[in-house]
Amino acid sequence: MVLLKKTTDPRPVFLNLLKIHLPLNALVSILHRVTGVIMILVLPLLVLSLAGVIYKPGIYRYMAIIPNYLWKIAIAAILTAYMYHVLAGIRHIYHDFSGHHSLEVTNRSSIIILVVWTVWIIIVGSRLWLV
Image (tube, rainbow, N blue to C red; front, side, top):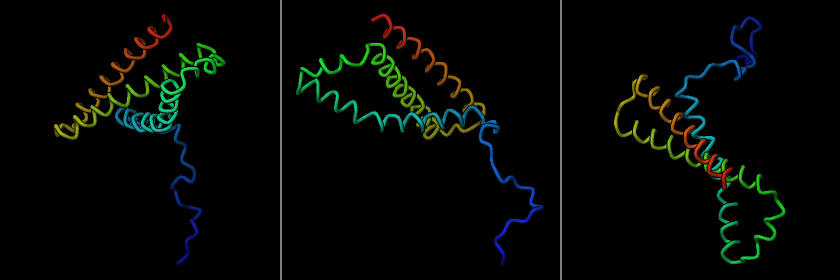
């Protein structure tokens, strides 16, 4: 048995992921996984900053090295990632326990998640920039 690929094989050799059009449900699910990874990566930094504030109150002097707008961007990114992950997690739990797995219901819930998340981004962004 030869494991070499035939030259007349019509299957693609290179799969271009940018040309594949995924449905909205898949994009919402992938973004849920991405925000989960972001949450895992950011959690140690949040714990260390909280511990630094509690046990070493003078840490604010070192935090002043980084400009205020960069702190606001970082906080906004962390909050939006956490909120999206919570919203998409609630969506997944709803679909798991309700038994509604039709394409119409999942499309509608995906749109609702994205609309609520967009409103959340606007609220968080406006609150952070006004403070």
